[in-house]
Length: 378
Ligand code: DGJ
Image (cartoon, rainbow, N blue to C red; front, side, top):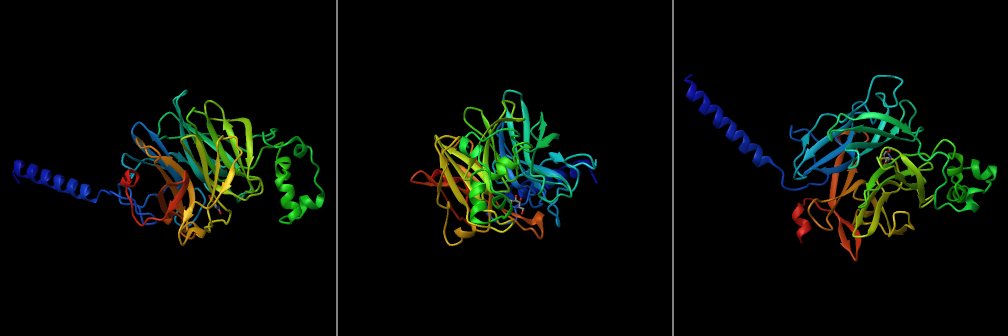
């Protein structure tokens, strides 16, 4: 074959492939549908979070396998400049084979969130960690760091936060309260619920640190970061301040909705008002989302009604939230990220992203079969 003919054919092939790819580029979100990455494989980043860094979005999430919820791979990362089309990056945090490691293969890693610390130039990943072979008993938070956004992230430690610290909003009368043994032992009775509200588990876990399961990280306008997590056997949410380098807790924290049974926290700040969307606790089964608001991150937090509207609002349209992020370059434009879990086939779990609408200043989630970022210009 003459060389020139060969080069012309290769060029034509390249042009048509590029054309095909461009044609296939996504221009909308299709909540609940398969969402292929740049290699045509359904995105595997469950319980995810978003980081916007240097004009690019980075989506981090749980890399789930086909038949187990245990972490057999680690935390995945995808990048995008338009939010519709995602390039698969290398695994950001890998589980290891070392049986002595907290993140040994077979542990549970959930809801990873990555933040960038401007002072140190380090990316910090926080996640809910359960030690291998112990179910959901360990209830720890894990931290990993990297000097590159896509990683690889290096695991540094895991622990239960705020050991030896009282929540700022726990009155002295509660700190010194003694519980009766029936209050301590018989779960789910009204007396037990009252004891939980008054800090039964805060006290139980005071010495070794508070339980930490479903979580998010929120970075405020002033650069301060907070770890928000389901604590006290998933009965109470804690909001805890992070150190300036975002790699540890300062020991300052509050309890939100004690005994209110919330998980899956996701926070946004619109102008100067904070909103937190959570779920109830029904395992992988959906339930009605909840909404809280506050003028100050340290509360008081007030509960509003379910942000979802419509027929399936009671099941949050079969989803559970995981994160909220502002759309770069837009005002008052936030995307709520949620998961539609598939516990029988975890990697096939679906993503439901919904634009947040504000009605009388309060977030509302309205189901959409398909939508695009133009939604925010209406
Ligand atoms: C609901 C949580 O939100 C998930 O992250 C996961 O921990 C499941 N419960 C486990 O049942």
